[in-house]
Amino acid sequence: METSILTQIRKKAGRIIESQLLKPGRVLDVRYWESSDMIEIDLHLPYAEMQNWNQIPYIKLCVDDFTFRDYTPFGWDVETATCSLLIDTDHDGPGSRWAKALHNGDTIHYLKMESTRQAPHPTDFVVGLGDSSSLGHLLALQQLTMPKARFEGAVLLPNLNCGKLLSEYFSVSLNTLTTVTEITDWLLKQGYCTTHTWFYLVGNHHFVTKLRKLLKSLGHANIRIKGFWS
Ligand SMILES: Cc1cc2nc3c(=O)[nH]c(=O)nc-3n(C[C@H](O)[C@H](O)[C@H](O)COP(=O)(O)OP(=O)(O)OC[C@H]3O[C@@H](n4cnc5c(N)ncnc54)[C@H](O)[C@@H]3O)c2cc1C
Picture: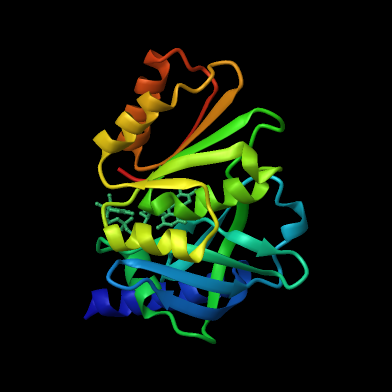
């Protein structure tokens, strides 16, 4: 009984604190990628300062009481203050459950919008490598790379349909591969120039660490890393 009262007080205090600190946004559309666990969400974020997004941003979303998860906005449009998220929900967790429960018209809340401090090199070739949780990050990286021809990469998508839908929905220079071995084989074949190529590794910590080791063994030093989960 005591625990239940304490929990209720904590939840109420949490809601009061959250209502002071959190900013609202609105869900414009939710699309479930067929036969996969990828969920695409369009958001209207009137308080986000998208005109300043010169580096890849991330949003700290409130997904439950006192519970926050980071996701990557991409495809943002400054005039309409809209952007999208791609959330991989192929595991159980508060973030996955939150994404699965979203509907058009819902109000969402976020704690902050920050920079990942990753931006594409201004002139050299940009190669993005990531997994299914980093699709948004890779699309944002392509969005910031001008001209787009300077960007290419590969993404680990074990679900074949997800890879097919990615190329149908987006004009993106990403090879979709289904195993880490396929990604490493693909990298070995590319023969990227060590001086003028910059690598951006994103996603699962073990995955990015493995790719960094491989790239270093090939003599590459221009490597930026953003590890997400382990
Ligand atoms: C800056 C930043 C940006 C991010 N952007 C995105 C994004 O745009 N889209 C996105 O999907 N994720 C993104 N992530 C990753 C996301 O925040 C984490 O994966 C988060 O843990 C998911 O929360 P959850 O509550 O669903 O699972 P958690 O409760 O945190 O984790 C539950 C279990 O699932 C495992 N797990 C977590 N994520 C995954 C996954 N993707 N695949 C398989 N197992 C997993 C965990 O290791 C744990 O064992 C980002 C992370 C960071 C740091």
